[in-house]
Length: 82
Image (cartoon, rainbow, N blue to C red; front, side, top):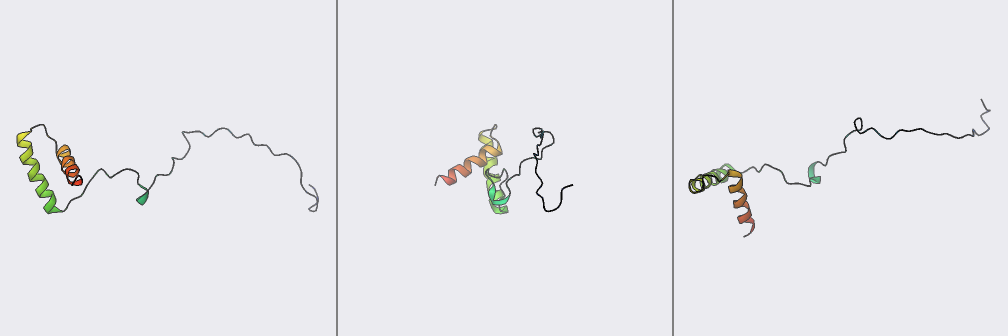
């Protein structure tokens, strides 16, 4: 071993293999205000949800293939267009 006053010299090489995707941690997910997509669930006050459901039931009588998702989406789009 060299004396403490002498610098240590030499070449250090690493033989690193490429990262293994099976054992790599997943990339971090955005949380909170970093969301890039809208939530899939919309929560409504009870009065609004009751009115929306009753309107859906009436519309469903005229179009038996109408889904609640399609109906609610149409209501939101119409409201946003105002």
